[in-house]
Length: 393
Image (cartoon, rainbow, N blue to C red):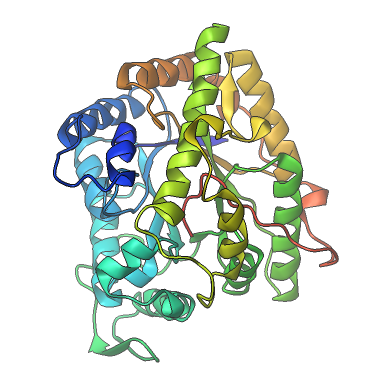
């Protein structure tokens, strides 16, 4: 099994200021200090033997402060020699499609033969949509049109005439190294049954956070593959991100649980609490309205993370948890997320280093079979919402 590392920044304690609407003061911890800690973490990924650097796309809050993921990964492409890169995720409706096609092709070129794992989604938070001047109600149609344009962009010349995007005949230059297969294995982040249906029907793979119990995720994987089967597509195995806190003493492990809970609280702030109008009545976001109706008033000290959905524990415990996750959901690729919540940079780096030394070799040796229970032979039963510390779409 391959293992990538999420390298992104959170100014977690700044949420107190944001939620109070106190914009007359700068963050108590400057963003540049958080950024420098993130670079220190990212510099460890290749020497420690991990397989890829991954990042997200978010704007305007203290949550995941990297912005353009292709810019951030281009920085890492030039700073590393061996590791692949991955997006978790590019939020398609926030982009102009021809520009996005060019930036993806350029990043592929900069990687010089290394792999670019493309995760894509349609976004959730109102404040991000509003800042880009894109109506959330149009997100699903824009997402579908964007996929069509990206796939067309691998041709020597292409054009497109859609409801939201019109592209005259044009060409992407320079051509990507992997032109012709660059978009073959795109993964989609989804958290709701509706988004799952759309992703499966569009021929995308699965990319999600293990934010709910494994049994719920296992049902989701089976249902996803049942939809793919109806479309005449082969079954798919998920790429999954898990919050990481690897330690040998119980006091540190308890702190790890608190950090993961803080991250769930911060995700709700970013998506549905801070500067966020209701999801009620927003077309395409009905399932999110149901979830945030229950969770929008969550207190930070009461936030929790699904115990079997994250990597919090000793090295031996984490090896067993990853093995169990693979068996339950046919996990193909793991992304670990070591720096989240208010976890100090040195503690995140120590956790990643211990994982690399004591856990990573065993995980690299793990087979990743597609299990019978993940094949999804039928669509009976109701799919469950899988939202938690969302990747975001």
